[in-house]
Amino acid sequence: MIKKIGHVGVVVRDLDETLELYKKLYCLSPAVVKDAMDGRVRVAFMPVGDDEIELLQPVDPKIHLGEFLRKQGQGIHHISLTTDNLDYEIERMKEAGAGFTDDKPTVGAHGVRIIFTRPQTTGGVTVELCGTQD
Image (cartoon, rainbow, N blue to C red; front, side):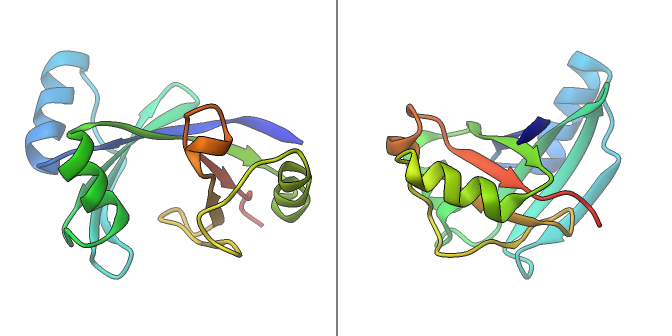
């Protein structure tokens, strides 16, 4: 069962510049800024109430996020949904017609298992399914 929206992922060209913009416009500051995906992405998590905005700066232009930035420009990349039973949700969604970018979950920036849907199978929206912390 899906529990909540975990975060909204936004791809940006320059993380530092975007952090300044979000601070100026929205009075938001990051709780975490770090490298992820073996240094191929810089990421910042900005709390907004019980939810977060995840800013993603691709450092490696060859990864999916780099391709997204090149083709689409800056903007919303995905919505993250949290579940207590990731494996069950993956199988349930596959049976309902969802496709996924990987065969199995990987570990995301928060240290939990994640997997992304193919947007053409989920109404044009990329959804990141996230397991919960143990």
